[in-house]
Image (cartoon, rainbow, N blue to C red):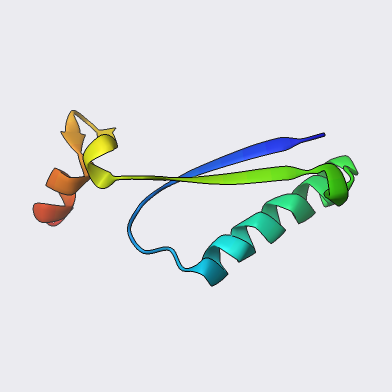
Length: 67
């Protein structure tokens, strides 16, 4: 029973995009490892940009600075 956790910043991923991520991750496990898609779990966590940091700065600060 594979479990995949995808973490993205909460910046407007659409329902369709999330569905594509779930489908694609599931299919990857089927194709590469021969896993059963019926028992493959995919969870998408959306993290506020204030709670995600790179290089000592939050994504919110980096986005505001144009990075």
